[in-house]
Length: 299
Image (cartoon, rainbow, N blue to C red; front, side, top):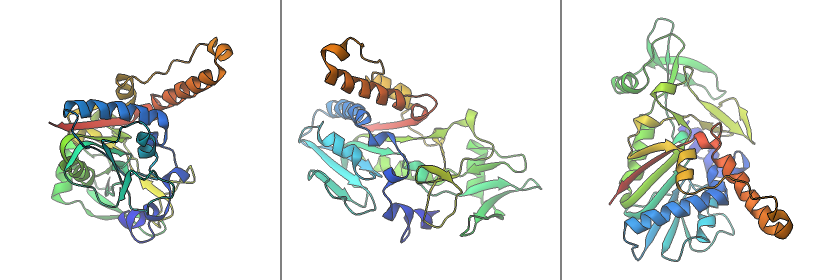
């Protein structure tokens, strides 16, 4: 999974994510909400001379491009992404391959943790929990029994008992979340991802793959996005809530504008309708609204 996604010629080293799937971060309506959150963090820090806004896993820089038009010049915008800087990006956006240290402001990672490579555990017919291996064609086989550290993680967060049950092991995602938090000296780290909690663990796991906007078989050949949902309750954060709840708390409105506005201000009506439509999609409890927001803060 690591080689397929991030190795030489890997999926995320050469592909533009927006060509294969859509995320909240690609929309201006989502950026409006993140700008409001940034304002809250900025105020809590006392409006410092420089306020960092870092997007880890920035894709083509869509979120920061929107934020460049919403945040004042005090905001230092930093995109963290493995691919080269795309053409046409606003000059004020810094493009780098590594997560910066000493962030004072807001660090955002939208749909990053689901792409942190992880192992899969499966219960064999004898009831032993073993790693699942895959060859370059995606064919799977049972590997060695899991080690003590992974067994301990499963016992605490995702117990496996019946033969055939699967789980994605969460330690690598937790390590990345700690890394994001450690990068923030003062302010907040926010991870947004699809995931599950102890009450909703899927019995067969969630490993999946996507290409060109469609689900495909997970084949570790670098030609598809390989992903798995995150055990969000295992991460440890100050605040855990659904995107629907978080965006509503940030003032996102889903109400359609009154039809009467279409007659007196057709342009304004069209813009308001587009925003309401986007907000509805972002807060859909059966879609993006079910994503989890994990927020941790440091004074």
